[in-house]
View 1 (cartoon, rainbow, N blue to C red):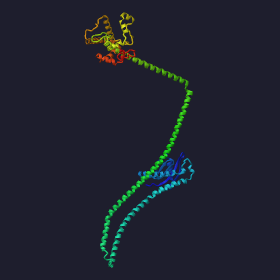
View 2: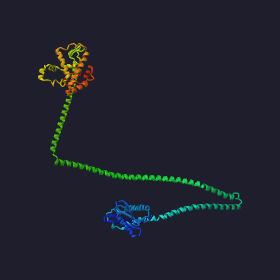
View 3: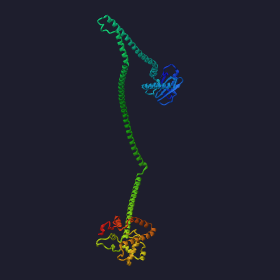
View 4: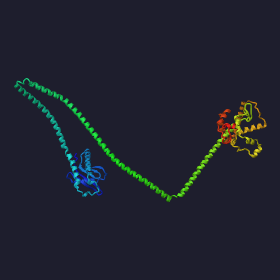
Length: 517
């Protein structure tokens, strides 16, 4: 695979076409210029794009940017070679772009580059192409030099072995010469060893050295490995610390630049927000002025607001009045319910006649105290009620058949059972049928009265089916007093009730003890 660049050019794109800034042919072939120029002129691609196109026996590699960089190489034989050649060519084009970006003459591309000296822009291109092609031609000499070094190392090892054998021969010859000299010198003959023993000793030591040589070699290699490891780790540590230092300084530099830019952006944003706020305020004032002058009638708006306020005040007054009326209605309903309960209990438990077991209504106990029922009865005025009940039926019918609106105390308390019982008692008292003293015990009389009341209650319930309001009132009262079977339970129920007599200006003897005094 040959990666030699045959032709290279630098051009820029205009509306009229591609204009060459600098080109350099590495080989004398006029077709190279035409192929490269037509390829670059026919490209319509985006910026920062890398393209490789086959043109006959050549391959054109193009790097598109502000300037167009192109080189022409031989077409590779295989796809793997094509990929490698494309990568090498793009590296070459990146190098071209890095060099031509730094040229101040190309800082402004809007200038007319045709009037410039072409040689000034071609020299860097020629230098880069020659260096790139020379690098490829120097690969084989470099490999040959490396092989020569390996061969030299091997020859040095062989020469050392040969020299070691020559040294052994020299020692043997020296030993023989010493033996000859010792035979001539009688004074040193005793000190001179036998040449045979000396030769054997030398061979023995040489064999010993050869036998221990692998151990020394392994030990030396291990020491060298340790030293290389220490040196390599120290070198890596130094590189790491240096890289950290460089990164620290670089990051600090970037942060300082970023902070300056961010500060400028913040100031600009602050000014923009201030201007927007002022513009909004001015627009608001102007719109208000324009609306008041051209669209709205202020006097009419004020009259409308006064009318709205007046209607709101009337609505609030109506709501308050409705609230008061509702409260009064609820209180009146509670008063009516309370009075109904009290009258129901009074008409159920009181005795108009005294007996042996219990005194009558007017009878006093020890001339100082009244019974509970009598004390409650003394708080009400029945004069009008009794007087109207004693009126003859004919006269009463002429005036009014039924008094629908009596006093507030009896308003809404027309219970047929109670009214019937009261009329029966009054009739018996007037005719003298009822004796002053009872002839039967109080317990028996109470049982008979309860039996009679149950019978009357059943009859009243049968009659009250036509009156929905009366039936509902009776049902509520039955539920309320269903658990009260004795008089004491009813007394306790009365004490717990809120009679609301104070609101009617009556004094209740149960809830207001001053009434009994």
